[in-house]
Amino acid sequence: MDTTNTTTMHRDGIQFHNVGELRDVDDRDGELIQRVPESIRTRLEAAATRMCHPAGVELRFVPDGPVRVTLSSHLRDSVVQPFWGPFQATDDVVTIGAEPRTITLSRPEKLDRLDPSAVANLDYDPRVCRLLLPGEHRSGHIHFHGVEGDIRPPELSEFPSQRYLAYGTSITEGEAAMGEPLTYVNQAATRLGVDPINLGNCGTAYCDEAMAEHIAGGEWDVATLSLSVNMVGEFSVETFRERAAHMIDTVAASHPDSPVVCITILPNARDFVLDHEEGEECERFREALRSVVAECDHSNVSLLDGHELLPDPRGLTTDLVHPGDHAMVRIGENLARELDPLLQ
View 1: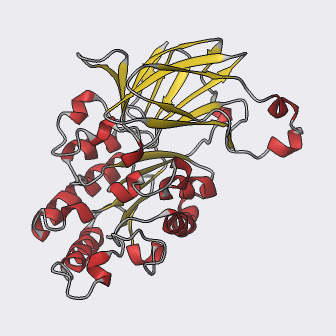
View 2: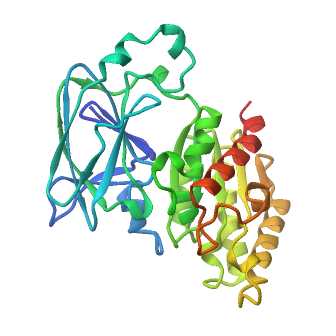
């Protein structure tokens, strides 16, 4: 069975979560895992290669016996982290490189003896194997070469019923986090009990029309649009205003009953460093987004000030732009608190 929507694929008994397409690449074996369909990727202004980095991608399946999944990683090595439902595996972490590597997985015996009361309220069923693929600078381009074993895709009752989609920059993609569970997208999703979809684009979140169409065509219950420090110094404030307005309108109109939360630029070096040459530019972009949201005709659109998510620079990396693990956790906690009432 091979079924696809814009954010999830089902094939070979696997749910390819946060995947828009598996694509043959002329000079590589296997199929490239990418977060958006090729028809969208080729229209992106600068983010085309970023969509080939699998930030937030998971290969999910329920096995009956041992399973062997073969993957490879090009451009750089990638660390694949298995989870069983919400439980992080420590013995099966694998680094894959350019040569295909087969990962053998068996459900830990102890998980088969869990007291039913201990798992009754878990968001992910422990029977579901989740292979978390790395994003941002932790990942190359990962190719899928096949799977062996008796498996099925998870059923709807075995993972969260609500979905949270996040669009933004490298901060959303999770550049400086030490691992995928520590990105603010995953931190917020865990606290909310929802399934995350990560569409962060390192350095290239330009409010592309094609990306707006892709988000509009997806299945999600709440979306955040972090707009967008990548455009500071690259576009005029007026161009940013036009692009942001178009993206917000496209996304909000497609899901009139789902909240769309627009996040102003998070505090960063331009705010903290004395005499920064772009010290006032971020605030002009923030004000432009405030005015776009204020003028928006869609009742499901709201504004969230980035300073509410990260009130001070504690936890940033030394570039004073990217959140490290501590700041990612703070952002995720604060964001979950803001989104929770919207999902009730």
